[in-house]
Length: 229
Picture 1 (cartoon, rainbow, N blue to C red):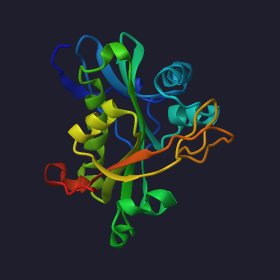
Picture 2 (cartoon, rainbow, N blue to C red):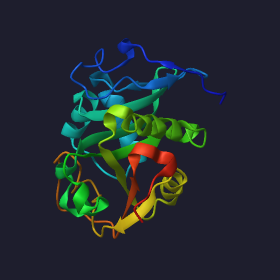
Picture 3 (spheres, rainbow, N blue to C red):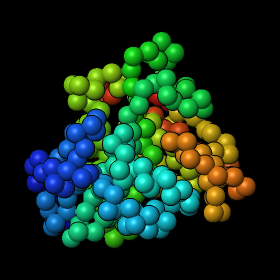
Picture 4 (cartoon, rainbow, N blue to C red):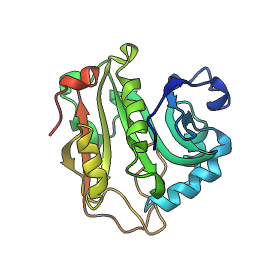
């Protein structure tokens, strides 16, 4: 893939002209062999659903797809090639007091007041576009967002990765995320879903044995960050 040329996104490519209530600014996006970045919109729902079914061993509820394609609280970014979605990053920035109980340890207790954290729910790229920098482009856009001056109260970015997903683990470690802890019996598969950020869930499913929780702390200055280990 050729080198990327950066320029500002037009509002027409964003979520229904990008809802002015959204806390997220239009991302930079690239034009290189017709590859672009834009926010998801409701008309993307069916394509997003197909991609998630292909990429992830989890059946997400319908409400989740509606939320990530329409709710401005989600940083739902797509890489688009010739009008087709080829990569997705779904994330959110939330108040530290909204962190789930099992994730409370990502911050020092003294840091919980008046700060936010970034949580990456999902990141995936079509197989033919992997190892070409698309995932890094999506991740860097979100990291750039949370390190902007108006987001200096964002103290950490975290995510969850299955222990069996060695490629994802290497990817996040390359981007300065470090293992924080193991979470046994966290995700569920076989057609059901247990724990998903946003409150949606299911039951009666087999659970994976362990889940990595990765964390990158010190968002204000990534080059000199201290990391959760």
